[in-house]
Length: 68
Ligand SMILES: [Zn+2]
Image 1 (tube, rainbow, N blue to C red):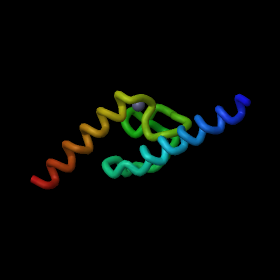
Image 2 (tube, protein in one colour):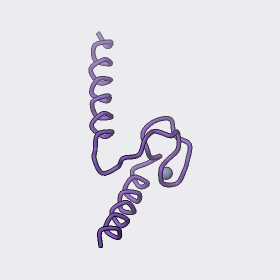
Image 3 (cartoon, helix red, strand yellow):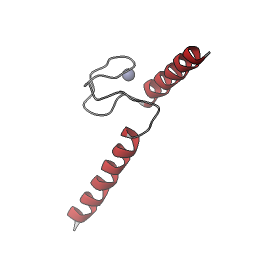
């Protein structure tokens, strides 16, 4: 019975990961390292939400600079 529940939440997690991976702003590919502080990670692009926020801020600042 708990198997079904596990599968459902796994699928949900996968969908969330796909949704996150398809976010247009961050184009980074999985490297095994946090894209901001280069901490080794097992999945995703950042070791935590702060690194994601900091990197997104940085990317935004970079693109503003190149447009201006
Ligand atoms: Zn990090």
